[in-house]
Length: 317
Image (tube, rainbow, N blue to C red; front, side, top):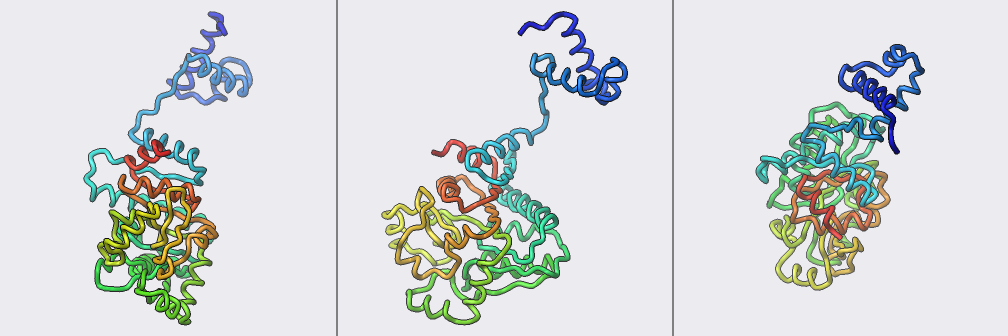
């Protein structure tokens, strides 16, 4: 549509007052002698006819765009993408943890959260380290997966629940059991114990779940001694691509039937889905296939991740 010279001149004048001189729409309306809604329409027209083009000059514009694309692609409630420009891998993990800490703190301020669930992992450990000291005496933090032993204690769910409870000046529960035990019979015996069954029931009732996510072939479960070469071969054979709280799923996000599942002491993936809000704090491009599958399975409501992982997720089928 062709815009006449006089109308174009008016659009330029109004746009200049608004965008360059910083006048309000009300001030411009008084000067031009029209109502404020007309000025609003003229400013919209200036954008429609390319008299005005708006550019955002900030490094965050790229990550915000990635966030919006991921929200649309996976139907997520919220996405936070952390810029990785100039950061080492260790710095990226810490930055994602910091973003997770900030998001959780903001979330808890807005919502009446009494019970917070937490799984395990190195990125969640960074979140706990970065979390500010607050007073939330009314809250209880619940580990969602077992975790005992002497290896990498700092990333176990019990330890993270304890450390986060100290930061929040609140209470926490303890799941006194390993994530994976040797036999199904031992697992059945342990989950029948009152102390363990009580905490697992608590886990089902949390208001928010804070989780990590693993690639079993490149993650911490092997380092912790929970998975051995034979286990990994079996998991690969049946199509496992990831785990949440030591629960395995395939590329479509479907929970996998495997003897290992019968030895896991943790919330099931179906129970995780019942939690009102699940926040995934996940870093690393080696987890892209795992994250993509988890999102297809609708296990997450919120995703906090790094820029390179976000880009790869948008490319994933």
